Length: 104
Image (cartoon, rainbow, N blue to C red; front, side):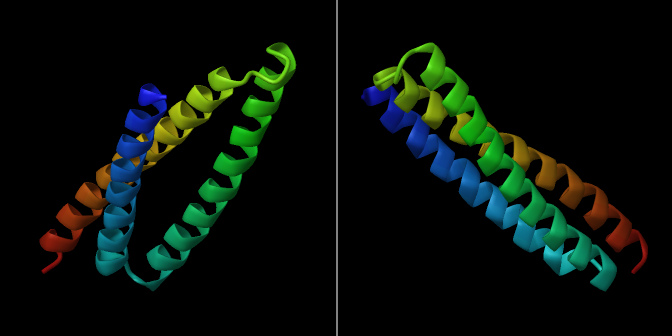
């Protein structure tokens, strides 16, 4: 559907932002911070995937398969998770960048 296509398009853009801020953070972090960021990202990805599956499963039970509703829900979940993580990483980057600049 058109709504799914739009959500997928914006999900991809948010995912790009998320990856960009991840990479920027890796550039300004010390070794300990890099390890923590890497672990955090891996844990976030695992949690997001499992939570996504749980939400879809519960909704498919409620809507007996769900059809197009589940397609929209899945696209919305992707959009939301990438948007939230991109903003979170951007905030961390801004904090870390400011501290990094103060130390030089």
